[in-house]
Length: 310
Image 1: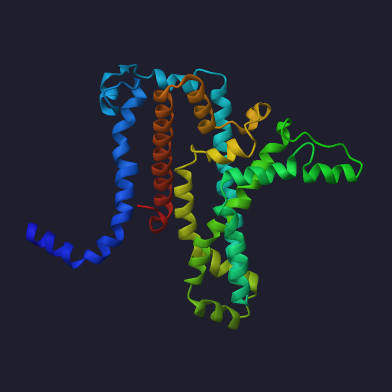
Image 2 (image 1 turned 180 degrees about the horizontal axis):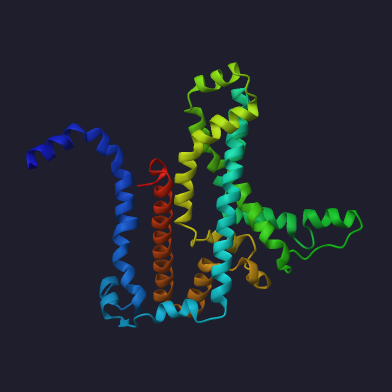
């Protein structure tokens, strides 16, 4: 048995070497840190005798770190913001990503399509710090481009960083601008893999371009759309820290619409220094995300087993 195992390793050594970097990444950054989840149940204090000894010697506090997340008036606000923003990102982002992929696939001039695709990729590789400064150049109360336009039209300038009513739309717009181009690549690759004879047969039957997209492209994309949505649902309790911290510039007057679980934990960690509290928040997010993925996958399997993750 051991000989057969070693023989398979030698036989597939090239493929295993290709998988090795990803496997090591998951080992060091996903699996080994799981041992640290015990900090969520302790009042962690770093002792001189090292990290692991500090975990052992720290006081056991049970569920106290979890109570911190739900014992304040902010618990409802940060949970609501995290969920609603992520739902908007998932569904609006899905629609726009699929639409963009379809549009790019229909461009006859492939060099031009590559140029457009590269331009749409660029925002994804910009850090949120840079994006935050871009947003500030438009929204600054004194020298922002939008307020300069408003002044030129005889309108009063808007204090963007003091008025929270605009920020749900600003946050969603900035996220979509940054992410849609990159997310469309998966759907574009799936469209490129569709058998072209299906479209040729549809054209012979007199189908319009819209009918081809509706009857061929979208149904063929259904499996990958389902899988990507299920994966996104698993992170619905995670917020992009850079988006919610850097773009609103940590403005206190905007906390009602920009404060999410991740930023709340970060600010709490800065104030109290309680590492156990932040670990509890991460564990809470992971458990909820796992539950949502399993539940969503179960529902999908009930309707179509082929489109489920497992």
